[in-house]
Amino acid sequence: MNTDELRDLAREKGISGVHDMRKEELIDAISGKRGS
Image 1: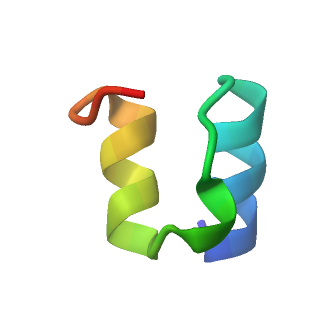
Image 2: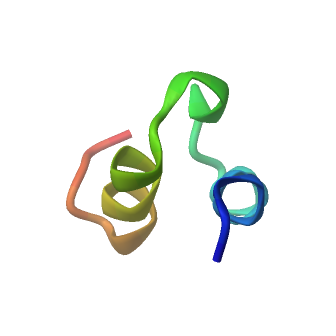
């Protein structure tokens, strides 16, 4: 997945602040390793 796809997925999961996240941060947030 590219960064844009990860941002879309994070938004669908209700994760905020996705615009400023790097790819690694998005993956961590989506997989639940980071509290949001």
